[in-house]
Image (cartoon, one colour):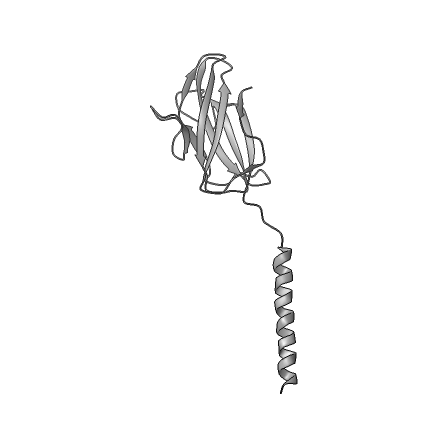
Length: 157
């Protein structure tokens, strides 16, 4: 279990709302670790500009996503971190990827750092409802009534 969440796909999500989830990650060895998130389309293609870090500010009880930074966790081998998290994303109907990364040097580098694990969640927007049969029948009745009224008006001429 390098990284897990308490949610399972598909997850109903509307863009701009808070997505509450619990992220649990375990260090395989002593080191510094961080979390990154990104959004992907339904074909698992990265959506440009959607990468973000996950931070837990000092004194806060809930972590959140920030575009311009992430947070390092210094962990011992076997150490487990559980984060209550609230992510606010600009899109729905996407795949959310959360990556647990190990810092290799002193600076975060997607080229050098090692991915320890990842989890993905399919976020589905509001369901597109089918046609409402009641509305269709109602519209047909109105159109039919208009047709009858037109015939009645012509008969009276």
